[in-house]
Length: 551
Image (cartoon, rainbow, N blue to C red):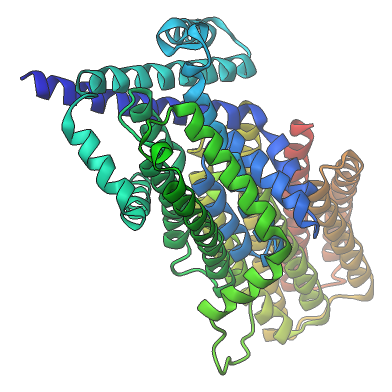
């Protein structure tokens, strides 16, 4: 029973460690908010900046796997190119070393031992979450609780292993791994691939090292394998993605494999000359030092060869011999851009989906212009085009709604929750604009079918209200895109103009009907058309209102 109890304690400790790491990353991610978005905006064709961005993002979200998965998503969505992706991937490997330094804090001194301050961190974090009203303070509370649970989990694992640190099985196992570098690398890779986190697997290795059961030779080769194992997540995420995204995942694998080969050979030679070092126990701080040196040195060595890494990825993921030219429509482009891998980071996901909402708005604006032309000129071709575009807008609404629902279930701060809610309202309003365009197209078809023409005066009036409605939607889309209060004010002015025109034109047309200057059938179509245009401007006003609420 004692052995079972120890096993349960180790599993419980591992669970708290993983949960604590996740909670800490969650809180850091929420606190970072738009700052993570700004990190990507800093990224240019300068690969050195890409390394800094990759390191910064990974330090915040505590997972190089998650960062690389996001990179695969960005490449697949066309946000960044392969050259920029290489820099971020290299930086991600450096950023992941932060976790190993956090784990090794217990060896820095008595005051930093987990059992000393971890319960205090959890207590402070819980108090902040329970009593603070400000969301930012609550996020700080989450970080404290995550930090505390991470260290308590480490302490549980360490306590479970401590009674067995002199057991022959550990010495024998690590002796075998030490003698066979390939087996050590394979072990590290497999464990990391299973738990999908090199930070967590390095943490487990450091826990064993805290109890003096790991020697230098086995720890070094297992650590090299852990860096290879972390590539599996990105490789799996690239399945079904565009070829360019697959190449980004392959570059990540190549980068870590080349580094593991270089350092594996160097360390194997060193251990042949220093067998006493190879057999001596390694502590968690020394693992952190090696992990950091490996990732920084690997980046320095391979940074000048980034273009060759890109070319090498083309060898593994080839271009098809004959690729037929295909017309990419708005709908399929949006499907490619709404990549689930980007959901790894809420800030980027929100920014990206907002861009697609703007794209939907621009499609609806184009359809409004076409429907206006159709009803003014009795153009059957344009009326049919509006109806086809309306189907596209409906599909876009479904895709964006599904994606935003997924985003809303992520860890968001209050500002992000408001933005997601407003984007959901916005796509609903855009879809309603599309419906009114469809109504206008159907009215145009009715005009064509019954050979109806507006009088010269009615034609001029219709042109004026269509122009005002188009302007209102145009400014609303621009307001959503640029978060610009000037555009919001322009929408308000246009909407008031359309309301005034609709009321004035309705009275004039009723007067023409009473004087028999136009037929009842013509009058019904005219009045329905201006009513639809007035509703279009109302929805534009709603879209601008959401932007105003966010500022």
